[in-house]
Image (cartoon, rainbow, N blue to C red):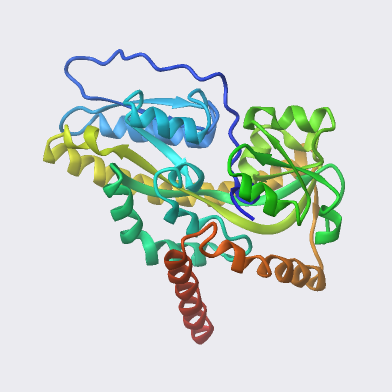
Length: 338
């Protein structure tokens, strides 16, 4: 159980290095994202860029949506200076420091956005310090809905998923081997996912609802298992060397505008998660499969059996323990206030 359960799947086009056309009066920061052009996340970054340009330093953000490859490639581009920042999910952030996996690589660990918020705040300072030590500055944290399974046949219980060929991204061999205990993982490049559904190579894919809706996934996978499998969590980061090149008033302006944007983006993405499911049901014929209480507990037991493998092997043990303790305390406080 790893990034393949909760991956925010990239619709990556052929990678092309961006060219600079910065104006001499402004600082140019190239920001990459795997979000497709025209998606809500692309538009929100463009809006944040407009705010940046109003402050001291007249910083100009050029957004490169869905054109710089997958998140691993984007991190490489930041390292060599082709782009100065990116909006990354935990998949890309884990290429910088594995600790970020504690917010996304634990299926069914979180069951509400309040729990996600509690977990994030419990490790935020530590994560930001680790990313900073690796050469990246976090400007805000965001999320992009819950990963759910979309399939060409109904899935109600783990046994229904086991014979299916399910998309798994290229990457860690150990993770793919773990997945084979739960279904038949089919490793493909992210941009081959839809083709895999169309030509019968795949039976199911794990995706957040906004991306499934944007790509009209129900045409090929008309069933959605109504389980909040894992939150898609990420952050906007810029390289430390580009950050250090800015003066202090400019850095303060970018921090304040970005923090406000992060709050708005989290609220908008959470609303969009539910709205996307409604839109797919009404306009694309999506059929939502809701497990019974007994089936839900079967899923929970199946996933819980994998937690000892996830701890330390996929999620660093200190972060795993900090997050699970934070969730225990949060649930205890919530129970008292009910």
